[in-house]
Structure formats: structure tokens, C-alpha cells
Image 1 (cartoon, rainbow, N blue to C red):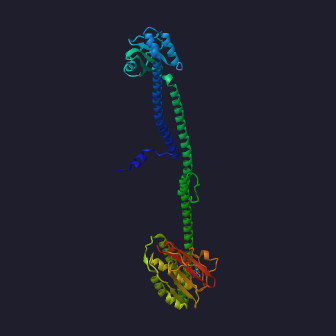
Image 2 (cartoon, protein in one colour):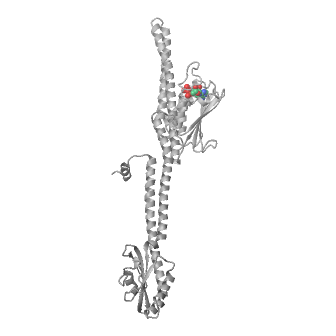
Image 3 (cartoon, rainbow, N blue to C red):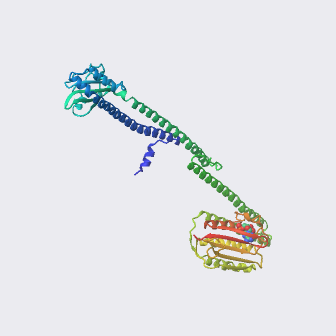
Length: 489
Ligand code: ADP
């Protein structure tokens, strides 16, 4: 089943992020402000209606209290309707919108009838009047005969249990609600302002996000078209800046990998071309002289064999390097002490023949290391080969192993390997380059024996694959120490 989010995203047409954020903010603004404002307006309206109704009811109750006496006198024939009118105008003088009437117990108006629309159809059967017969106050909100919405409030004027009359106050609904309507209008204006603000804020936000994202996508496009010099501007929101930095880093790495690949191919071609040219020349020479001078032909054949060996040696080193860098390292527990002893046994004969003393110091308490035994063996072989090649007869070569925990001179959690020789040493200007591929201090050593120039590059790749570091200390004429620190993991 397709996840819900994917089903949704399939239906949304693809659009620019700026447009999307803009529309989203507009919707949120309109919906959010619309819903909140509707609730607020409804609440204000209802609240205003209740408050105004209560106001008219309170006014009716106070006026009815004051009317008890003049109405009683009028009904008993002692007083006049003018007294009632005077009392009414005194109590209602602050409310010009309110009209009134008083019905007698039989339903006749006690006062001269008003022309106000709201009082035209008042009778004892009006809903507010029937309520006021049994309760202190009755009210209704309805249209008067001319269609004006009106608040009616009625209250009974009694003498003990005797009904003397009914006071009815009528107020046009819209006049009474005018302040409430004003508040509602302000509320509407505020809601519109909120929508406008949300839209503007959404637009600014979308510009803030979409501009740098657009530039980022242009850079990505350039990179995908092969322009590895393209870099993204690191600006905009933190996430976009971070993305731009990561993209730039990736591009820089890609560019440097490609450059080193090109350099490697160039160097490798050069390295292979030299012996191939030499082979070609010797084969031609051989063809010319083979029959007449067998000794000369024999010399050429020896040189040919030497060039072919060199070629094979270089190709092997290149293959090894690409294998170490390209394959997943297969790590197993390796006992470095045993490995070093094996290496010593292997190189012992050659060093003895060269008149060099080979020694090993594996220290104590050496734990197993997680690594690739074949590669570690290759690493030690390369370093020993170099040390023996570069040390004259009578010199010494020593392999030293130390565990960081047992020996406080070295970092904890690491194993330190050192290959020390008392040989010719390396001049300072060569030291930064000796780990470079195909770098040789003396490309054509007297008496031959030059390597492929890949020995130390292979050593460095092996050490990196094991998460370690390799370095060298050397004094010209006094010897060199190649050191390696491998993490125990
Ligand atoms: P190669 O395979 O040709 O020996 P390397 O990468 O192993 O190449 O070494 C690079 C250069 O560093 C060599 O030309 C060599 O002269 C120099 N070198 C390496 N180890 C030593 C050492 N122990 N003493 C002096 N020079 C060394």
C-alpha cells in the first residue's frame, strides 16, 4: 500500500518552493484568521445582545418600581396620566431610542398611544407581556409590523396581588447594538490586517528560502554538467547554508579526486612508457646484431629481462594500490608481534647478505589488532625493503612495537610501529613528497635497484584503511625512522 504522504504528494502539482510557501501562508492566513474571527465575532455579537437585553430589562425594573405609585393613583382616579409621563421621562431621559407604553389590566393603553412602529401591535397576547404576567420580567426580540428588529421588555405593575398595568419598553435592536457593531467592525479590520501580514510574511519567507535554494539548484546543475569548479553561495537559512557547504565540500573532493586521478594516469603512463621505449630499442638492436655477435645479443637480452621485470614490478604495485583503495578491508584479529617476527625471518637473509644487522623489539603486553594481516605484512615489507635498500653495509635496521597503554610515551588505545635505520637519511626538502605516488628521491640510482615509487604510497593507503597515521623523522646521513600509529578499536 502506498503511504499516505506519498499519495498526497502525487496529487499536489510540482511547483516552485516560493509559490508553494506563498500559497500555504495565504491559506493559513485566510483559514486561521477566518475561523478565529468568525468565532470572535459570534461571541461578541451574542455577548452584546445579552448585555443590551439585560440593560433594557434593568431599566424596565427600575422604572416599574418608580411607576407603582403614580399608576396606583391614576387607576384609583386620584392621579393623572401626566404624573406617569413625568416619571417615565425622568427615568428614560438618557435613552432616546427607547419607546414605551403602559397597558391596563384589560389591555387598553393607559397613556396616549405613540406613533412608534414598535408599539403598534402590543397587546396582552404579545409574548413578552404574557411572560411578564407570571414572572418579574418578560422579553422578546422580533420584528415590529414595519419590519424593524426590536427588543421588547415587559414588566407588571401591581398593587399587592392586583394587576394595575404592564409597562412595555421597546428599543430598535440595531440602535442598541451600535457599540457592539463598532467592536465587530474593528475585529474585522484586525482580521484583514492579520491575513495581509501573513501573506506578506509568507512571501518574504518564501523569498528568503527559495532564492538561495534556487541558486543551490543552479550550482548542482552546473556540477552535474561536469563543471566541478562551480560552488554554491553559503547564504539563507541555516539548513540551506549547511546544504550549500556540504555540496561545496563534495564538489571540492570530487574535483581533487579527479585531479589526483588525472595525475595518477599521467604518471602511470609515463612510468610505463619509459621501460616500454627502452624495450622497443633493445629489441630493434637485438634484431640487428643477434646473428653476428651472440655476446652482445646476450647483453641486450639481460637488459630486456631487467626492463620487463621493472615493468611487471610497477604494474603489480599499481594493481595493489588500486586494490587496497578500492576494496572493503576484511579485518580479523592480528597478532602484530607474530607478524613482525615472520617479517624479520623473511628479511633476515637479505639483510645479512647486505651486511646489515636486523633487530626486532616487540615490547610487552601487545594485544591483538583488528586489521588485514596481508596488508599489514605488505606495509612492513615495504618499509623494511626501503630501510635495507637505503642503509649501507655495517648499518642497522630495527623494528619496534609499542602499545600505547603499556608505554606512556605513545597515545593510549594505539599500537606504535617504528622501522628505524641508520642509513643515508632523507633531505628535508624531500620529506613532504616521499608519500606521493611515483615520487623517487633518485629516479635512476647507480647500479639499478630503483623501485616503482609507489612503496610508501601503498604503505600510507594501508595505514589509512586501518584508521591510523604514518610519518617519518629523518636526518641526512644519520638514518630515518618511519613510524605508524594504528588504533586498537
Ligand atoms: P620506491 O618503491 O621507489 O622505493 P617509495 O615510495 O617506497 O618508492 O619511496 C619513495 C622515496 O623515498 C624513494 O625514492 C626512496 O629514495 C626514499 N626512501 C624511502 N625510504 C627511505 C629510507 N628508509 N631511507 C632513505 N630514503 C628512503
